[in-house]
Length: 508
Image (cartoon, rainbow, N blue to C red):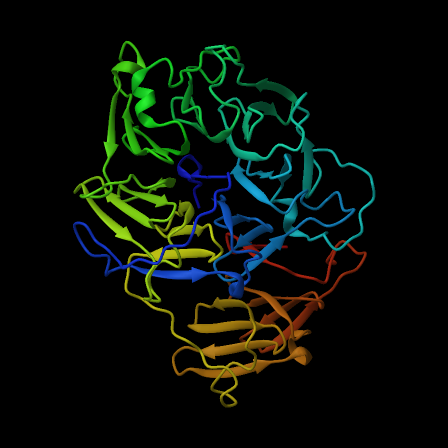
């Protein structure tokens, strides 16, 4: 899947609000065609406070939480947490920002100010259960790597946002310690700070969002200092434009929470107290003071501007706006209409009104991360609902275990369910009949992952018995275990699969 990193909005500072339960409201139309699907701790999420969301090139969704990094393949979660005395595990469990660079590396910012690099290609074999030594690996080695940000006065500073320019430099924003420009291959570093009474410095050291647009112009949203602009992303000593220099920038607000770019090249900026601004800077003006800046009015009877936490755009030219306490808005740029989604007693509504982050994947699904602990909301533009599958009601007509670790639908309309204690369950969706495969057949009763190859064979990952191959046509099983040979697995604990073009199986 194609990455959509330029529209991914990450809000990484921490504000706490009382939960609001309101009745559903609609301004110009009704959201009856939408259903929210909630994904939380019961589905395997490590923690329900979502701080950032990313979809990578392979299609995996990554959720940064206050306690662990989660990778979601649409069926199950893989959770990465810090392991004591293991230099190969992630450095911190509070994940504040995520970014995928042009080479496919995942960069993870944490609350303690450590930058982590994750290589998804070498993640095919899991090594987290192996005790680590005190040795450091080079940046071209496998797994996670820690890069301490050695600011001269920036110890333990939370990394809030990351972006990358065309030169391969990472731009890293911190909460209270300014910016770092960093190239991981050459180890070049440049620190950019706010200095009092210096007009060309950053307007604030509290960086909330860095966004590099298609023209390679850098936009820096700060908390308390408004919006900053770097005229040329290649320039180090550049002029920053802040609220004190141009009145139009002051109109946008001082507490920037999110920045995005729509398909027309307009900049969309969310401010915590001042709502949403749309900046048209496509024409050549003498100065930013001449730019056309319009305010997006979210309510026809607005007394108080909603506190904006996240902004995103989908393929249909809709702008999605997440707020602190007032739910989710959808603004249709074509019809100029607004839909308002809020939490109600309806199970198909938002789980809460405190929105932390929004992400729109390549299928058009809107993923909404909440702030007060109710997890993730998944919004699809149809009326489909989940059908429940009974557990242990009668043999052959129900699941044999109520703890589900993995779900997979094959090309023959069979649903394969990996359970915690009941092995592998097969459900024929045509007649809802069940067949069970226990440890004698699949090798283990703990099934973590399932995938089908282009020949129709199943590959089954287990918790402790390695990899099982199942030829459905011949009803034969083959087993792959950990060993020292080149054809052996490096671990019997299988977490996830990915099939590349149907011929190559990647095992995590």
